[in-house]
Amino acid sequence: MLLLILILLTFSYAMFEGGFVSWFLFYSFLPFAIYGIALSFYPLNELEITRILPKNEFNAGEKLKVTVNLKRVNAFPLFFLLIEDHVNEPLKSAQQRITKALILPGMKKEFSYEYIIDQLPRGEHFFHSFTLKIGDPLGLFEKEKTFDQEGKIIVYPAYTELFYQLFENQFDQGLTASRERVQRDTSMAVGVRAYQPGDRFSWINWKASAKRNELMTREFEQRQSHDVIVLMDCAPDKSFEAVVSFTASLVRAVLKKGAQTGLVTYSKDRAYFPINGGEGHLRQLFYHLAKIEAKSLKSFEKVIETEGLFIQQSVSFLLVTAQLTKPLLEKASFLGQRKGSITLFLIKGHKETASDNERSLISIASARGIRITMVNEGEQRSAFSEVGF
Figure 1: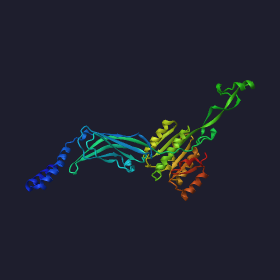
Figure 2: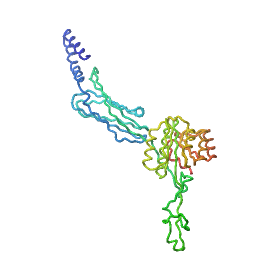
Figure 3: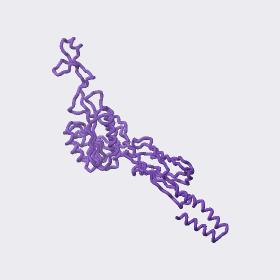
Figure 4: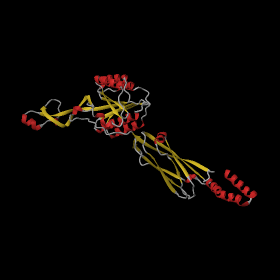
């Protein structure tokens, strides 16, 4: 309507005024008006949009390059095309380059653009839709349409290769040795002894039996099982991302050494992953840690008190938190006396030191048999350098 009114106004001005200037204005405006009218009939539905992601799984801090391809059937000249990729809020706040792009396609039938998110934040992120806008050179007419194009990526927490020593050349010196479950490693014979009722037939050493003229059985190295339960504090804290990152590094290091581990978190709800091992269990834990949020409704000492009632066997507990308090220390001490060894990892910011109160609590914890290791953000590799289990 606006274009038609402007055409009529310029034509009326030329008719009544006459002269070169009035007709020049009319004929100069006429191509823009005709293009605007033609643009109003251009179907945006013919555009085909494709979002290309290099992969669907990333680690926090990685770079993501998204390519958006557009195809169309007609070669209608487009002066400009403004396109925006709608993503969820964490990606919007993380990206340094906006997902909106201005393209000058002209008469091209295929064109594309790219945008880069330099550091991906941890979490499950969604791509929702595209918004396309076209218009004429004078800005008198614009046309807009939204295309649904969903996508999803999962960004696992960043992890560090820890110098994790599960064994120190002896089976009973494992990092997380349980006090109850003992088994024999039949691949390592350390000697022979006289046969005892209950010994397996396959354990008999026939050569030694022939020499001594009595049945002798091989003596095997005994080792203890290595079961670990990791409890992660989900209370809101500035170092929460460092807590998640260290927890991911910790469970990965334990599982890569062939031990078994479980994980307990309290965010909006309680999440419990029983003691298990293997690559599938590691992926399950990483997927949970990718989505975890600092929205705990219970204090960490309450979590420890509650979990102590659920867990029956004696295991080694690894606690990961960014806040050290006296009630937490008391609950951890009580749990260690009843269930197994306790090690607490206190996560601090980069080059951050312990406060006077925390130093005092660390001394008290040491007297009660609780080992506390302070880990600074970005220095996770040294977490086990001074820990002797």
